[in-house]
Amino acid sequence: MKVTVNVKLVNSKFDHDIAIALYEGDESEENIKYLWEDEFEVLGDIESFKVKNNAIYTLEGIKTDDNKFSFEIWDMTIVECIDKEGKINQFSFSKKLVKSTEKLQDEKTKDIVFNVLLTDKLEHVNPMDGLYILKSHFPKELL
Image (cartoon, rainbow, N blue to C red):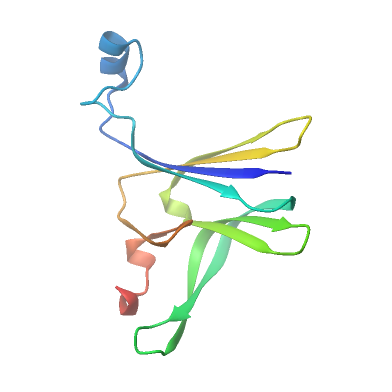
């Protein structure tokens, strides 16, 4: 199956009443609904799709001084896609950032579109594609 993950940052200042009154319910240049949007099309033939709530994400990498680092980030929502060859793709979100999620699946093809709406009321960092962490939960050593 094919999986697409859409992530949108909701504009809390969007005024639905203005959109209805002046723009037939649509957003306008001065009244936008989403501040930004990321779309990820997961490569490969996906065999397994899971959403893990209250999970721990391990942020690993190498600092500029060639020293490795590893930090556990708690209270995450992790979307995990595993293809037929066993390759794992993950998209991770601090649970407090997630305003809502929606999984849409085509009955015939079994293709999945997973929509994630994030709140703009809490500061977050996006250190790499598909990773959205509350700034207060991000390791200070890496800021």
